[in-house]
Image (cartoon, rainbow over all chains, first blue to last red; front, side, top):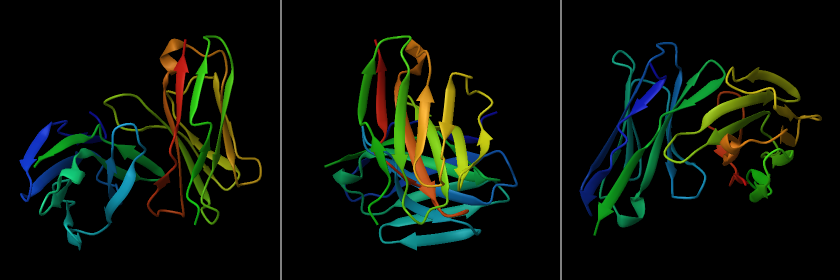
Length: 109
Length: 112
């Protein structure tokens, strides 16, 4: 079983819609959770991080964490074509970061 | 804050040659990580330093790979006797303890 699982997509949403990206992790001891955006040929860029159960909002982005279900999600409101990218979920367990394979998102104008 | 810097951006070499990459982390970050990423995959952990100490190394990492961070600042990653399967993007990231990582632009390695 992989440490971090994501649906690889592709996920397509129309411009202005809400995009919902999901991630599950296997280690209950994981303590911190991160979402990165990666454009093709570029390095990952940090979008959000969350440490506690519940929701955390930053502009159009909301991260949601449910430790009991070992589930973390990212919502992107009012999706824009510039949001089209691969979104990587990362989990900090001990001193090591584990990454999912990423979900490809396309926002259709 | 100048960000994480990696050099070179691209490296093309023949199979069997040795290559060395450099990473300069954000200056106040004491943790430095190396990852490898291939197409369609997330970054795969290779090794990690806290200051100058190499604290963890992936079990999957071949003995041909070695990394150093001699003064707790910049780091180098060397691959000896390169193989076709080593072709990938090599990413460096730095962070403060248990804080989010910030990535450099990566070094893309192509083995001919």
